[in-house]
Length: 283
Length: 284
Ligand SMILES: Nc1ncnc2c1ncn2[C@@H]1O[C@H](COP(=O)(O)OP(=O)(O)OP(=O)(O)O)[C@@H](O)[C@H]1O
Ligand SMILES: [Mg+2]
Image (cartoon, rainbow over all chains, first blue to last red; front, side, top):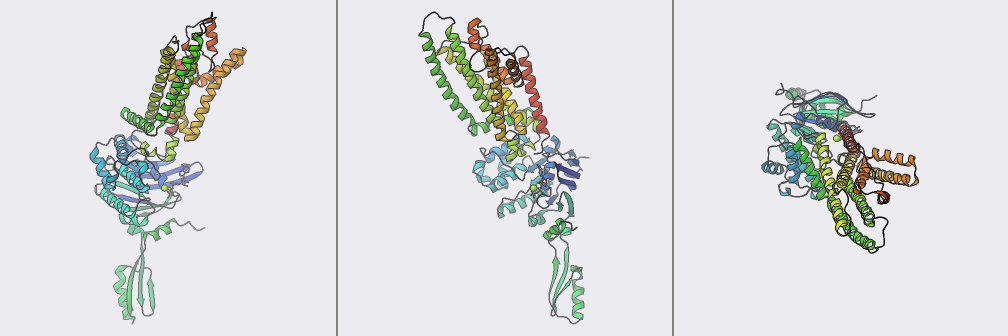
């Protein structure tokens, strides 16, 4: 049973912090080998959902299971890697010592080799013995990503892992995510970087005001925006036309005596879909 | 579980070492012991220089008073150490984002709390025993006084500081670092005030004051343990000497009776359970 269970399943989760309602019934699933992007405006509840999944926050209602185990149980935590949105490692420890501590706590059988490999994967090989307090913010975030991958977790929860990274670092993380997917690891990625999410995620869930407002593959969400054809008389817009209809449309126009200068299939971006999905409902 | 507790304890100790908390306390301790040794030598010189017929054996009074003073300072320094080692253990570290990466590991919150507790209790307990031992040695060699019971006061003092560790750890689940540090020192001060009140009560023969003091000492059992430690110091000293020693300047020397130890253990267990309960339910 547990073998077929989703890596992460979230069903009807609600969370109230005093009077604020952070989540009002969110559903989400991440399968092994799937990379799911979680999008939403500031305060939408993304971090709260992630914290519930790793047992830092207790849901007020609903069920969260990790590989079949209830979220927050030792069994669930044993297969999860987590990078918090706001975190800090002890300033006095070196990169290597931080990873060593987490190897022990994660009961990772990996040794020196695992640490060296993870540091190399996040581009920190040179800084292996540098103390955290002597690292830049981005370096610390890289170390955080390495920490989240200690012990080969089956589910990796990353809360804005690239917020402090330079372009090369973002590229590195993208490659790393693709690599994780290749190994059958499930990844939930919180991010505000839509381009990044569009490039790597198999599935995107958008939440706003604590509820799911859109969900699907990036191409599904970024639905096509019709066809634009430039003629002598100006640009003509066919909002419902698809790429397949282009030859017929052109033939029709040419048949009607128009001269065609340019044809564009308009593709909506994930950004447009996102902005539409999270827009406040009009009263 | 044991491996996890051990890992966290080692982590906490290394943190203390690298953050130089231990170094600062050790320097303060060195300074205190040097002054104490000097003062003891001078005081005993003055006492023995007056060979006229003494009503009481002055060495006992001077020695017990001096060692009582040393024990007070030892407990104070032990408390400083306890507070520094635990003040940010839960809320403080959670607010800075240090705790979350640890808590999501399989060990769980109870192991984390146990690790922090054992680290601080071992360091503070060991520290108190060491400083007390050195003070006894100094009083015996530079002065001329050896307590009736050498081991008892040390154990009671170490137990007192372990209780403070427990209280500070519980405080850290409710208050952020600075607030917790202040709160623990205030609680510690309240215990001392209770001790002084008891003494005044005794001097004025006020039963009410003495009752309040003894209730306070039991509510804050590190105070009762401290009084017990002072009591052990002159356990078999009799009569007038005893009266004078009991009226020492740093709280009364009261025998806690047979219930003190079970109560201290139960108290620690309750404080501990409250901390674990509170931490277990916290959203981080
Ligand atoms: N510990 C807390 N106590 C009270 N309210 C909280 C707490 N944590 C989060 N909230 C509230 O819950 C809501 C969701 O917050 P959350 O951090 O999950 O948002 P987010 O989607 O991660 O936002 P961002 O993009 O800014 O990171 C917000 O309204 C926030 O104010
Ligand atoms: Mg967030």
